[in-house]
Length: 123
Image (tube, rainbow, N blue to C red; front, side, top):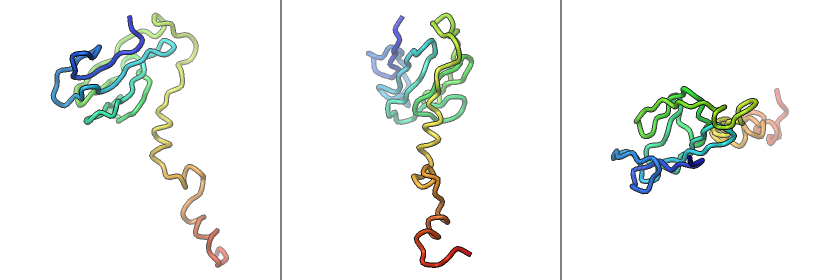
């Protein structure tokens, strides 16, 4: 069994999906500490886990995976793949963080900015 699987339309893919809306190299599955993770490889039509678009995400058992609108139910047992203890960290929070502005990430709001750089005293 491989711990990295390439999913795409091309014949050399480990999992070949012969759909016109699937990219040649659409995504990669990797086994990490007994859990499967998925990473989008800059595909044209993206991937979703449980209805949410993702770049990289842990695939928990029984989750719904959509690869370019083709839905699959992910079924596996992490313990039989070597998992123990709590699941490894999920990178989903990084996606949320990257969607926010640099000002928000730094804890600065636009209003705070205006007051700090203004010659006027805050009201």
